[in-house]
Length: 404
Image 1 (cartoon, helix red, strand yellow):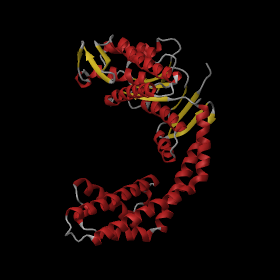
Image 2 (tube, rainbow, N blue to C red):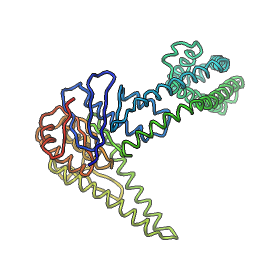
Image 3 (tube, rainbow, N blue to C red):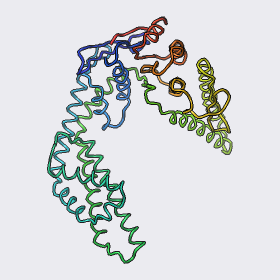
Image 4 (cartoon, rainbow, N blue to C red):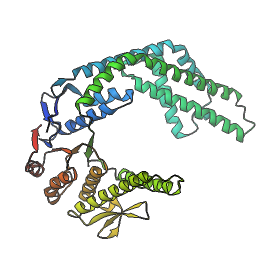
């Protein structure tokens, strides 16, 4: 198998690490040594390679906190330089925009100050939002703490301001409809001016953001190089530390509904496309196969299974009795979540952080073998400090270990 070497050096850690993205690997060592961060960084690199939204590029790069990055011997430190240049240009554009539109921002502040409090603070939720909007506006006008302002934060503030102004106009018009004696003409004029100014600032700032296009081009070139070197693969980071099981069931039910709707469309269509029906049937069979794989593996840990009921309803069974996920033990929840996360996310690389968390020794003795069964044909990375997990992983031929 061709090597796909990744070299990482974090800014706050003297240790440097290199490993093959095509080899099953266990990262082991004491807590606090950066095992989790390595998995998250691998995941972030694949996210970056596929990310389409420019505003997320810097966020992903900054989250990795890398000082050095090499893929197959190719140095990507220029990516960090492009990122810093991008952030610098965006920050300069933001400051230039604020200075150029200071009169409009000050007028906006004066207009909002004139709006009666009963309209501004019509609910507890609105009060919190209004206070946040006004506080941010005040800091912008005073040009206080420029270093903490960010283009993303300013863009979010403009959106909040725009939606707030819209809701304010609707609130006042609604109040007039129910009380014709209210003299709200002046208030309506005020909030409509606020909405006009908010729309103007929002549209103008979008034009300002286009000024970073040249630096964006350099950034895209660096990003595309990474995509090529990562072989266009996909990855998924999985941790059982925070379980969101509702998303798993929702994902299955959405897939079931999509298949059911496709079948209905096929059945009532005047033009029968047999290939389309075969495609739907294949998706259905793949889903049942995943459910069957889960049931065949989980039975080694507990008498648990999932079944499809009433065409689109997914139910959970333990000891042949229907029950909710939250009734399971901590270990049963984690093992169930972990196995379904793998089965329902078809990626090239699985990044599993401390799979032994809250599992009994009996579960730990089985889990590595089953993780390899579920990820067969894919690459598996795990981070652990549990001796049983490390030893079982290394007992499988071809696996390698990296001490962190």
